[in-house]
View 1 (tube, rainbow, N blue to C red):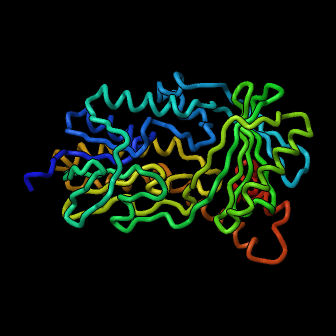
View 2 (cartoon, one colour):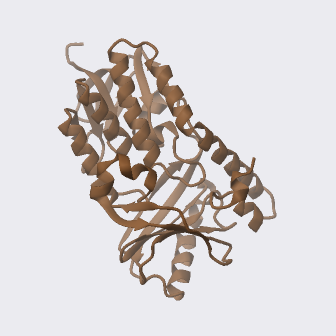
View 3 (cartoon, helix red, strand yellow):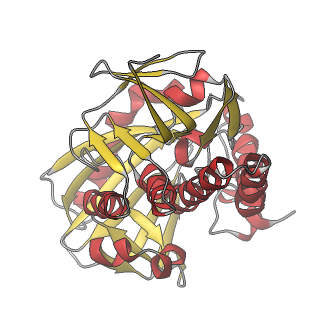
Length: 357
């Protein structure tokens, strides 16, 4: 295997999870190679760009990438009146800038980060082939490559349940400091959102894949409605979309021919199955994965179990509640009668019904 490059840690994916993992592993002196198929960190953006305040004090990158503060959450169910949650603080990010700052931190701490560098094969031997023709063998492989993770698939840990999203960026005619959530029986398995960014807003919808063909007309209908209400301009400045895992956490640790495999962020299914929020979980799980790699390389044979326990302690309760609420609502969509207003309320975090036992 003389033509195989050996490293301590290979990180696949350089979003918030992968960059955080690479930084923590490299800062402890490990030889870390991190790769991403994108040509430029964070681009294209496939995110609504909102992050709750809980992340802000711990990540300097949030401050550098902040576009505006969020104070409230407004929820509308089936075009009923707006209901306000007056204490829902957070930050709207420039997500590309945020990702780029996290990658810079990883590089400054010693990680080798390479872009336009995709995984073409994961062998049972643990050797990973890149599109450059290189072959890599790592003591620890960290999969931070999203909901359709190639690393996860190689070890049989796949997020089967997804929501498909479509988002546009449009002019916002009046300054707004709330995230607006739209719940409707039309949005099977998801919801719509309006997230303000100064003079603009991200307007999007997520739905179950069975309704993929309805995404465009549903989003167009919502855009037209908000234009008629005088809230938005008609010009579309940007379009994006993607997949969000909504099936809960998959097995985050595995072995590949004796090599330790760790999954984090979306690859581990840590995105909230109801809200789709995943940036906090990505940063936290990525940091823990990097720490786990350090412990494993230092000879701690139980490091992977500790990583699993940490993820369960941090995210288990909230993921399980959200998954239960999501499944309850999806069961309603299987019947001829669409979900009622009360059932939609019970599926969303703004309402006490969601938090009931």
